[in-house]
Length: 339
Ligand code: TXA
Ligand code: MG
Image 1 (cartoon, protein in one colour):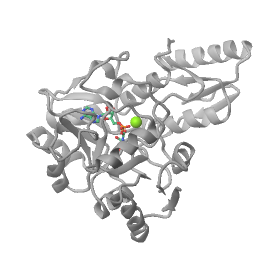
Image 2 (cartoon, rainbow, N blue to C red):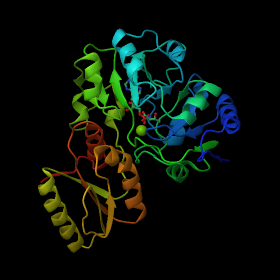
Image 3 (cartoon, protein in one colour):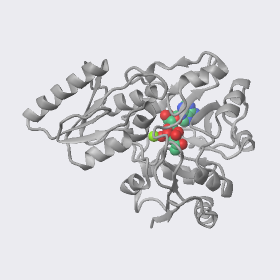
Image 4 (cartoon, rainbow, N blue to C red):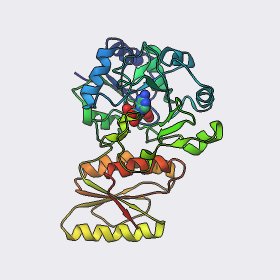
């Protein structure tokens, strides 16, 4: 049985207690963060963490992020916190930044996918923080079935997990829309493993140069250090095509592709930052931040409207645009058209 806990009107400590009790009993509770919804369990409870992998259909070697609510919690999971990690935590926590650090023995290998490092972040959502404070540090991947677009509202979580987990806290829509930035601090210089809500440029202002892992921009790479990179990701049911190029060229190419696929008898959806005539259209917004916020919602929504081809406009790879393009290219299975 799944209980849906309504906190759309804001934090409710009584309801938090109900959810916290479920967590402490080893159950699974989905909760909102500022990025996307997480599927949470007690990070130190092996059995509970194992159930996260089962529920998502997630490969066992794809490690989870541990969510904490105070700097004191960091020492419970990380064996060592280098100076650069401290600087980043001070500047960006709570917020959409995940730090990969050497793990403490107490953290089960199930949680870290067998690695001797642990990924940690302090989310900026009041409901997430209250839930962690009332229970324990939470292991939480995005609350979507493995391979599907990440959830930015409780409806998305209900679509994927109703009846399969014990609790879903409905805190309305998330506001960042793409997941946290993941940086490996066990390497020198540190390595960007996943672009996300905090732009790379902002991180480099605080700790200097960061190496970008080749998988961030390029093709699928099989790498033991970052197992999450090698799996199919963010894909809706429809075929996705990303159109990249200058804004004028993108507009022209997208309209061309719409006409071409419609002629072949497809139902075509477009997601873009300008109006396009298609069977279905989703406006992504004017700024890169809006595009990030709407990205996963647009993929899920166009799927629901029953299109079989989605043509998505690529955006500039600056700021949060780097995270947007990383997600879009994966959603498209690297089906990219240069305009
Ligand atoms: O914003 C977010 O980060 C969301 C919310 C719920 O906090 N969580 C999230 O979790 O996106 P998930 O499991 O969908 O993605 C975690 C990413 C994966 O790419 C995983 O491979 C990487 O973090 N990761 C986790 N632990 C790691 C480790 N020890 N070393 C390297 N990468 C790690
Ligand atoms: Mg995920």
